[in-house]
Length: 370
Image 1 (tube, rainbow, N blue to C red):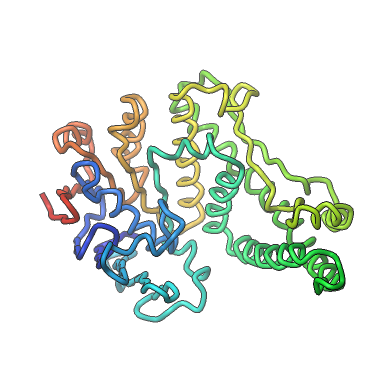
Image 2 (image 1 turned 135 degrees about the horizontal axis):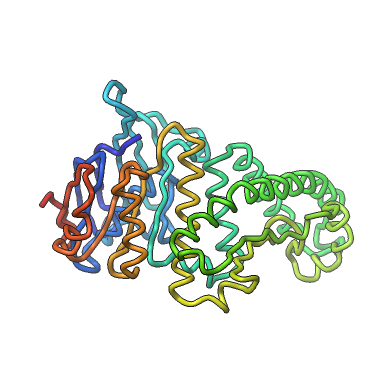
């Protein structure tokens, strides 16, 4: 699967842009702030229906405009008909997603069909930030791999929002509290949370050896790294946890137990990566996470994910860049999108790459082939 063309209208710093893309390597060259990363984010929208940078879709509308459109044409081979994906948003309205001009009934139905993997300078935030960031990262990956997991996660989050709304009402009768309703929610929430735990454990068992292999290749095998899954539900009765913590939940006005509290713990030589790994080790750890993500997606799909490489030459050392470019040269990846500030440096780094390369100059929200 390749992205053959990309069109933008009032997206971030672009009034309008239209690009014909290479099925091999596409390089976006421009100064910082020129809009290179915004092109990668537009591709991320086509894959995952959301930005990789901001949680607010409205912030992706160009200042002064009241809507944005991102459109891409995909193909899976020379004999296949192109497939057009379009994401659009108008202020005050719901985001829309269409496939060949036909709207999806649910955004979730699109997830996993056009996978993409982004490697960016901010990937180490997964290590430094809290459990929510790590959980969202792995949930997003699992959602692309397993539609059953995505459906369970959507149901769980909807029930959790309802339960928390009940808890915020208080447990006094004159507050309109309905304990029967709370128990009915718990009865639905418990089996779903338990199933999410089973699926996350199963996923990690498959993902871990891939991650460890990629880390050893990046770091020459000097450190032992691992990931562990931390959940209140492992070996526990979720329904019983909900009952026994009901008073505490009312006091705090939120659900204190469940799958939404899970974490993935990153360890190096049995110590937390966040506090015991060097900056270089953290970068290797983060890249290995993404390479394992790519491999898992590629192994379960009929096509390789799109690979988005953002500012790797500015932010990574020569050794890690060389490893990534070895994989590009060996055609481990499919279609690749890369940003850099220096065309000469990019050309030197890609000297061994034999796949087709297109270079684009990006300047102040305008983009054109070099």
